[in-house]
Image 1 (cartoon, helix red, strand yellow):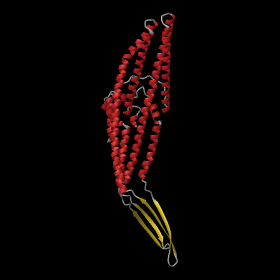
Image 2 (cartoon, one colour):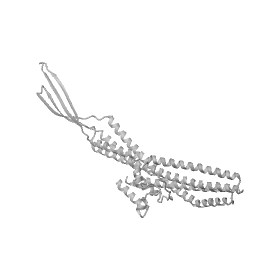
Image 3 (spheres, one colour):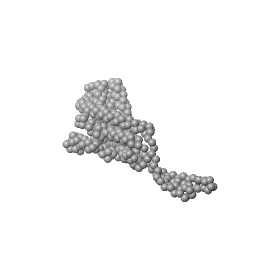
Image 4 (cartoon, helix red, strand yellow):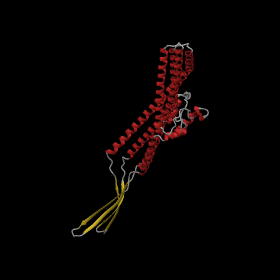
Length: 415
């Protein structure tokens, strides 16, 4: 029933995203293609760890199905002395094994299956976190590259301004102070360009260290898009695909089964066996069966009560996890809408600000404005460009976060 509900949510989401279903599932141009991303995600150490843990869980599940009860062989020997002075060598051999009763074998098998479900959920969560990290580090590289390009552009402007100040100085139209200001501005822009270059190198190194399989070639950042669908639609999709919730649900199921197992264990497992004995100098042969049943006491009852309380704790943990993710979805969605709007507003005035900077630079070269006015105009243009890029990166990152959490990219919905 749960799988059918998940499929229904996924289908309705696809229909809501776009009339052409594939359009809503296409990987954004700002992110690595699916093939490269999946390769990098699968080789992430945390994903490898989760895969190894799942392999271990398979052995654990097989052990639970087999049960911990094993055959035990016993052999005892004795020498009996009679008043007549004769002696008799005697022995007893037995083979016995406890037997799971009261439905314990079935419960153990279900517990093993639940361990596998937990392992699968842990793999999904590891992949999800790796995908989040990959998207963030990838965008950081593109953003750092774009900032460096802005300062390279500003460095060219500052060089032109210095040359213009020197020409005006030679023509007697500028003071030594203006030449010094232009030189100081060039040095400051060069410093900022160095900072941006260092930041880009660090971003690339971080990406290369975490995901060495990925190329770090810079690409142009595209225009952000709005979240598109309503908060409720995003919430329904993300909650249906949430790996942390699947993990806690599986842990709750395990706690419930463990409680059922503890309740069944109040009836102890009997041990049955067969034995053979030889007495009276092999003159007597004895064959028989044995049954031993432990008497249930306080220990088993307390273990059952403990397991029942652990079910309540697991249910509370699930409720808490759902609320936390719900809060997180709401916050990310609101931030995504706000950052897109900030980018749109910042972009509207960027072209005019840049035009003003170019016109002012030309006017300075012609002696129509002073250097202070030029530097102020250029600083305004740079601030506007950086604000646009910051808003762009924030909007893209939040939109990618929604897509990843909803398992709409990189085939995460197949996990």
